[in-house]
Image (cartoon, rainbow, N blue to C red):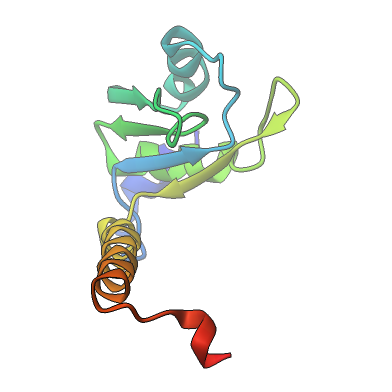
Length: 125
């Protein structure tokens, strides 16, 4: 595997590379055993979390024991076809995830303030 050659050299990885992968576009009925079969080919896995809520279905987090195994998995599984769906495999970036949550909170707060003070966005158009 290429991960072995990466470990031998003193290779610097980009800053976004980490052991946690965020997987999107999964089939809704995929099992954890199937996930371990697909992702386990690239190294030892510490944990897999599959989304079950309405908002998180079709997504999963995969945590590898080794960062080089995670990099190999991203390189090989991005665009991989599972049940006629092409996987989107990304490195988990908590700052981007938090920005989405913060944006939603801000939008909710603005709408509450508009309702409280009787301000409508339609008046501005």
